[in-house]
Every structure is written in structure tokens, then in C-alpha cells.
Amino acid sequence: MDRPFRFAAVVREAESARAWADKARRLEGSGFDVLLVPDHLVGPRFAPVAAMTAAACATSRLHVGTLVFANDYRHPAVLAKEAATVDLLSEGRLELGLGTGWMAADYVSAGLALEPPGTRVGRLAEAITVLKGLWADGPFTFHGEHYRITGLEQWPKPARRPHPRLLLGGGGPRMLGLAAREADVINLGMRVRADGTGPDGMDGGLEAFLAKVDVVRRAAGDRYDRIELGTSIQQLGVRRPDEPWSAADSSRQDETPQVLLGTRQDITDKLRYWRDTHDLSYFVLHHERDLEAFTPIAEELAGR
Image (cartoon, rainbow, N blue to C red; front, side, top):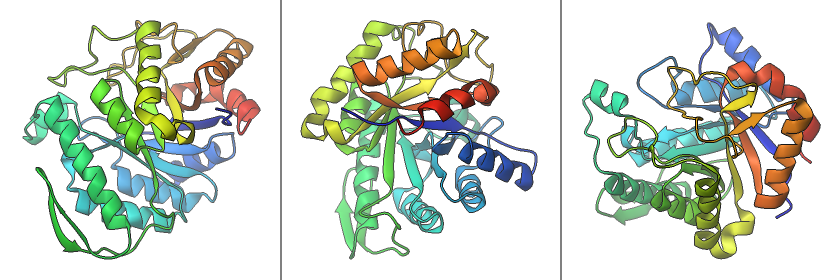
């Protein structure tokens, strides 16, 4: 694939509406393509829909999205209407990130049942069918194991047709297979434990990372050339301790593009290597603390 680089940054909160808008405008003016917000019920993070809408209204080019909406927290009919509204108000700039939901602290604190991974992935697959069906024209009916939709037609429709860009993240073979079949963007991550307590200690390292790329390539088939493949940059320049509030575990990822240590030139060369050799072109900056160091790199490589 010969894809240009696209860069996104995860932004979690600000002290005021003006400060949030300023963050969005700074991203837009500094080589970034997308502002992403997370979706957790605990921790220092804005609620996604309001945050995305405010960022979109403060900018004109910047795409907005989620990394990622937890499917278990919203019925897909509700999310379909919310997402279509954000896409319309942003004039087609929504990049809708979806996942199963996984963090045990969210489920325990909110009194939600954390069901087995297979159940959650199956429910997410049905949710994607519902979303795409409700974004299409005409009444939509779907009777699945998890959702039942009968003759529902929603307005508004998304500005981007046939639907907003869909981002799926994951590290296990079931999630990667689903992403390969359905997503426009895939964010390669580490598998998480079935109990939602953090990354799977058996995952990690270069071999495992490259195996995930191969899973996507084989599962996507003819779709592969239309998928933007990427990952989250968790360490940049000089290694720092992983943030205590973050579920990221970079300890085994030094040989992967999730850890980019060294000089600006070292990092630029590594990004080009991963794009030119392994097809990764969509890179997400995981920590706001790294924005100042990464901005000149994004400005140099954006769109190339």
C-alpha cells in the first residue's frame, strides 16, 4: 500500500470550554488530522459526544472521533442517532471508534455485567450491522441474538455516505478479524485479560505485533488495500513510566511502533519504516504530554 501518514491525538479533558476549543485548534494547526476522545465511566475524561461536537465546532478541517466507544454502554440505535448528528454537524468529519468495552473498573463501578469476551465481540458485530443499517436509507429491521430492530428509520442521516469512517481497535484474533471485515481504520493494540483488569501478560513484543498485521491482511482479503492500519504511540523520545490512570503497558513493546525512542530523526525514520514495510500509516499519540515533541514530526510527515 502507498498510503499517506495520518496522525491523531487522544485528548481527554480541559478546564473550560475555551481551553478545550484551543486544544482542538492547536491540533488542527500542527499536522494532526484527528482528535480522539476515550470512553470510560471512571477517570479524568470528558464524555465523548459533547467533547467531539465542541471540538468539531471549534475547527474546520480537524476530524473528531473516539478511541473507542464501548459498545456495552449504549444501545446501537442510540449511538447511531448520536453519531449521525455529530457527523452532520461536523460536515462529515466523524471517525467513529468502536470496541466491546473491557475495563473492569467501569463495569464494577456502574454495576454492569462484564460478560465473556466472545459474547462481547458477538454483540459488537451485531451492533455494527445495526449502525450501518440505520445510517442507510429506508426502514431497517434486524433480529439478532443481542438486538432487535423493527422497521426503524432514523434522522438525521450522516453527512458522509454511506456512513462515517469506522475505526475498530483490538489485539485478539476475533476482534482483528471483525475489524478486517468491517473497519476503515484498525488500531492494533494488545489483547486484554478476559476479566478486564489490563493487558494480557502473554501478549506483547515484535513477533506478536507482526502476527496481528498478518491476521488483518489474511482476514481482510480484497479489502486490505482500503484499510488504514495503525497503532497508538505510548512512549516517545525518552522512556517514561506509564501513567497510573492509563491501561497501557509499554514494557514489552520496544521493538514495535508503540514505543518510538531516540531523536526526532530516529522517530521519523521508524515511522517511515513501519509505513513502507508493514503498511502502518495511522498513528495515534496516546499521551498529551508528548504533543510538543511530536508536533514537528507530524508537521514534517503529514500527508506524505
